[in-house]
Image 1 (cartoon, helix red, strand yellow):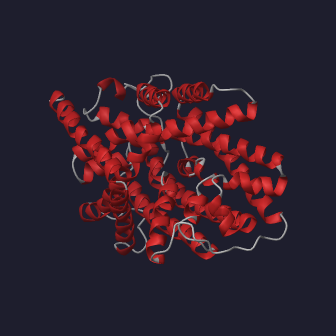
Image 2 (tube, rainbow, N blue to C red):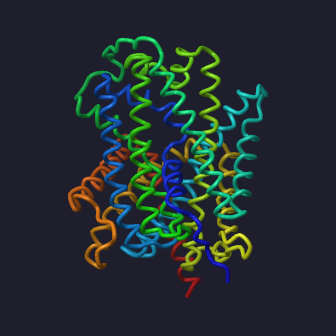
Image 3 (tube, helix red, strand yellow):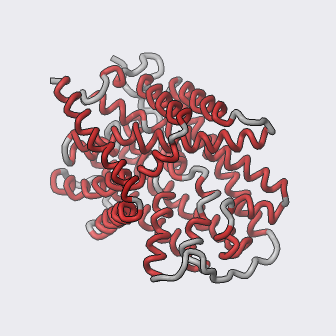
Length: 430
């Protein structure tokens, strides 16, 4: 029987980590934070604080990778720390809500920018579907093929972001930043907390690199390096992008535009600059799709290998040594959601669900520390740093439920339906 091939190294892991975090959002989302906190110091401070929390999480996941270098990554951590049903619920949410919903939304973004850049009228949904189909096929050719595509797109993405940063810094004198009243008054602490929610969501995605740990040459080393270098690199990128946006637009200008990257490039280079950054956003969106297609199917493969999902999903190609059925499954579901146009609603269910599992995975480190001998990498400052990460995750969950109770309830309802599905598959496996 064919098995997964260990062909990825630390560079691949670093690119996968960065690719899982950086999508098209960093070109657009800075204004969301600027509308909550209205001074340059607080805006940059929110992104820095979110980066610190992400780094604390990366430390914990790096130790988990050293302790449990298995296929499925986070899925395996949840399964072995708690119960197979907990891991199944994570995979269930990943397939129906978290990963495929996000992919559909990003594919739609790519389609929109591609159509704008090529001057075609309409057809953005068709372009999105074609992009998903092509990336599905590429990843069926092997993990090396998928990883090379992902790395190339990641480097192009960094080039586009670098262009934005350089343009912002070499432009003329920065605009003065004014304190604005958008978002109204209230407690500065509450405003900062509100700003942290979209920031932490923007930093999410690095955990997906753990899904391909079973295909890394030395996962306990390669994934650890990838997590730490990748998250640190993204923190630097995010801070520089926000500094440039504030420098060129000012805090008030940043808060009133919904397309900050385009506004920066238009201010510096005119319409040509806006077109260049539109190309960068399209590439960035495509890179995120490539990373998602490479990583998440390994979770569905692990579920099937455990006997709690369709058995065919555990099938590995004799020729390419990748879980072809799992890859095709994700591509098909993402395409269906894209065609349905429901991805915006699905995305509104994601935050509470995703961060529940973030927190539980962080807690699993406490469990493994009691059960297993020390790993080659130890989380700095544990248990304090790990506890802070878990607390931050669950704070996001509570805040999301309070602010969006209906959408959060739907997300949790999808999880509860997963319990019914788990009972069916687990009983069928006996």
